[in-house]
Length: 80
Image (cartoon, rainbow, N blue to C red; front, top):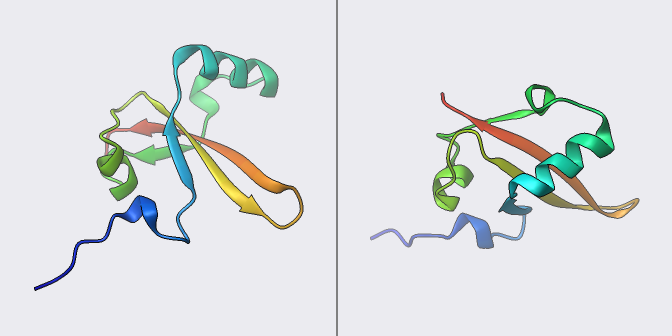
């Protein structure tokens, strides 16, 4: 029998969280971009499925960085 692994707990997977509308607006303003210019991630991505996130929501991804300690990235969830 195979043991199930929680992909969010794996040491190589960065931290993910769904952002609220206010946070999204701040990011768009700070980076002077439009919502449509955010990088995309498919709703079928295993991380998105595990988070039970929906199309149109935005994920904040916090990765470890050798130069800055942490680096934040953003992805808008789209239908496949």
